[in-house]
Image (cartoon, rainbow, N blue to C red):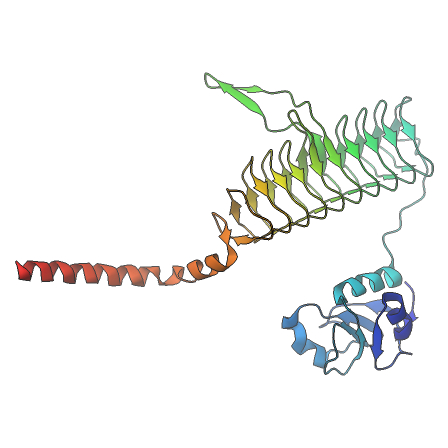
Length: 343
């Protein structure tokens, strides 16, 4: 952990100081918990009231505002905060162990320079591992797998045979990449397993969360696009194509043969039916059920998922439905009485 002046931090992120540029900043924290010598940020307007009375030494904001703390004005406060956290705290440091004598590395596998293969990791036949990779205890890299440079496989991560992993990919603990897709042909009441002959491709800078399951394709490959981040406990079906720079929050489920564009965001527990197309820049609210194609730029919520603005109007009526039903029943009775009187 380093200590920097607020002025040095502003220069690092291309920002401007309003207040004490000589202030020493030693760490980062949240608006409500930060104290003297700490820096925090504001990126959500609902937390504006906390800025005035925060005990933090400095707050990163997009504009000048009333606060007892000094301000660091930056175009994108959250991104600036990320840069400062990296500078002050750094990323996790990995032990430099070399290749453990307790790991199994096939004689036909190829390891790049400066790899650290930890005890009880397994690297299968003809696997190719790039330079500066970390393979933690219990991780399994199957036969004919290709792993790029600067990758991290945390404990018990599994990469099945033939999969392709790009550069700077992170696979968190207990994730499974390339297991058989859920493919069965049902004939006369019996489910017959279909061989899954595709593979999984994780492009550069992808991160896969703990407990994820990403199925290999039945015929075509399953692909996670460059820079996409997949949260914990996400399941992605066989043959699905996730575009670059998507964010899938934990517990999302995507069925097979889905095509998803770039920069999509799926909230927690979203379910996506198979064989549909989701466009670019799509946002899907938590617990939505997506059953149809989604056009570029759409924001949808609900089950079945519909346009967010329409959904807000529709769901706002739900609590009034019992009373509305009661009124409709009463109107029907009055109309019946009126009709009887006319006769």
